[in-house]
Image: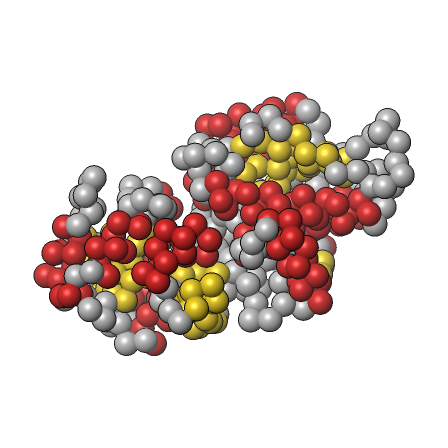
Length: 372
């Protein structure tokens, strides 16, 4: 899908009209989490359709120029350079945190507005920038909420298996520090490859009541879950996946009942308002399956950017107050941006955070276990 241009034009407009173009970044092929990328793009495309049906931006139709990052930071940075040369008014999207960090740093260097849809890594840019804002809760907030859930559920000794990555390392550090300050312990287990079965032996030796998977899908996550579920020594051990792997249909398809009762972070409110319900129904039709929270993030990203471009003007440089002036009704609540202490990017501080799992009695249904 690299190089694909998605055009959604309002009814009745001449194709010769000048378009307002937004560059859209998403992982659409492997090794990227392409299922998340598909949901992200579906949300962005739906928002473009709605914006254009409502008259576009200052009477001009909105257009997405889509680039596949494939979870590659260098590819994402090159895409930002290309999109800037093409004259896009702003950037939207990206799911993978390390990839979004590369895109955000390049956007900052070029002075190109970038609203990050899904990536949560706290240090999205190395320096304070007026160009970058983010919708989801920062990792430090979301993963502390997850740690609070574990403690409230009675887990004090928690094991973790993690693949090498800045994102996973950052998450483990947040969990370890938050748990330690409240009497909990995080124990790191080795992740043997290609066979993850020895994880079970290490987990039994550590006598931990929970195992957190800071790993990719489908592998090695699926193999680890199956191994733990079938080990009698580990009956009653909670398996957790804070990054949200069980959100997507492929997880349920790969694991069936074994994929239920695995808590993860989900960025939705307990109840959607009228806009969220309408968008959710349209996304379900577009995706032919239940939309993930990532699809809602994609929709909100484009809707917010369209509002910024309407009010601020296309082609004008942002000021320090531009993001601060945003007040938009999103699918998951009213979106406003602020600067958290020490943060380098503008942040939606009230972004919803839940801990949920799939119901063992009905794996297609999600149970809300904790909110933050």
